[in-house]
Every structure is written in structure tokens, then in C-alpha cells.
Amino acid sequence: AQSVTQLGSHVSVSEGALVLLRCNYSSSVPPYLFWYVQYPNQGLQLLLKYTSAATLVKGINGFEAEFKKSETSFHLTKPSAHMSDAAEYFCAVSDRLPGGGNKLTFGTGTQLKVEL
Amino acid sequence: GAGVSQSPRYKVTKRGQDVALRCDPISGHVSLYWYRQALGQGPEFLTYFNYEAQQDKSGLPNDRFSAERPEGSISTLTIQRTEQRDSAMYRCASSPGRGTGELFFGEGSRLTVL
Image (cartoon, rainbow over all chains, first blue to last red; front, side, top):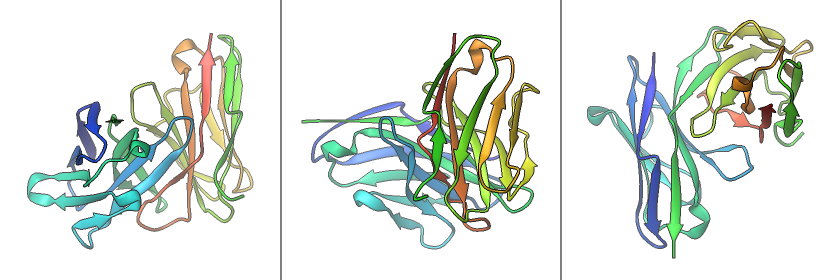
């Protein structure tokens, strides 16, 4: 079964500093990988996805992630943190399901705090 | 509708009662998913439908949990004889069907069993 591991349940950065949220995956086949963001009292929103095209993926709100097969990693970065980035971030890997659906297996999440 | 809609947003019930959680997916989306998210954890897969057919229910924890999507649109997740350990956020998601796996999530239904 495919899985993802997120290192660090809580990350704190200063406003304007680099954001780095770590995700490592385990997959027996080339994976589809995702980062979702969850703001308080809201649903999960897709930030970006890797689907075996370009290894550097750009998403919304200035976030990007790089797929590194050799390191089985898909870390999320943003050059300059903003207060509005404070949220919980989830990495996920996709499994194909019978009937053509996609089961997402999520990591345990990383809570990002942005300080002045 | 514009997004995935779930109701109720909050449900408090007593142990032993049955609860039904509703999900209205994005119009035209073929696939519908139910996930459960415990505090401090990521969402965990429960079950999934293509149109009205339940394709996979391997994530349902036991036979007290069931789901249906009779007309291929709105879905209901039912938990019978609720227990305190059922307390969690229940999330519904939909997707257009075959593709790269992006799911569109609703805001969730938070269930508290006393």
C-alpha cells in the first residue's frame, strides 16, 4: 500500500522567511502526489499536484513542490511566508481504485504557524 | 452547486443513537468519496461511489457504518448505534471521474458522540 510521511507536526516561521514542509512517500508504482491545505473550519483545498509531468510543480498562493524520485520526497516550499499561510498542510498519495477512482492516502499533517 | 455541500455541519448525539450525514457533490461529478478525520490526523478513506454504485467500502470500520448514493448524486453516510469512538470530522469529496486524482472536499460534518 502507498503511504506518505510528513516530518514535523508543527512548523513555525517568521513572516517573510522560507517555508519548507517535508513529505516522503512510499509507492510501488510511479505516484501521483498532492498537497492540500486546510484553513480553520474549512474544507481541504488543493494546493498543487504531481502527475508525472514536470518534477517541479507550481501551485496556488506561491507554493511549489519538487518531486525527487531518488529521495522519495515531495517537499512543499514557499520563498516568503505570509501571515495568511497559517494553516494545516497535508501531503497525499493517490492509489487507483476499482472502477477508476482515486483513493488518496494522507499524511498526518503539518500545522504551519507564521509569526511577525 | 458551486462546491461540495455537507450537512449537518455539526452533530451532537448520544451513544447508541443513529446518525445520518449528507453530502451533495459538485454537479456532474461522477465519483463521490467519504473520509473520516480524527483530531490531529489526516483524513482516512471510508468508501467511494461511481455514479450510484459503491465501488469500494474497504475503509468502513465495521458494519455499523453504511453509505448509499441511490440516484448517483446526493450521498448519505449512516452510522448506527453510535459509540464515542465514532466522534470525528466526516468529510465528503467528489471528482469528475477518471483523471489525476484531484478530489474536491466539502467543509465536513463534525460528529460528537456523548
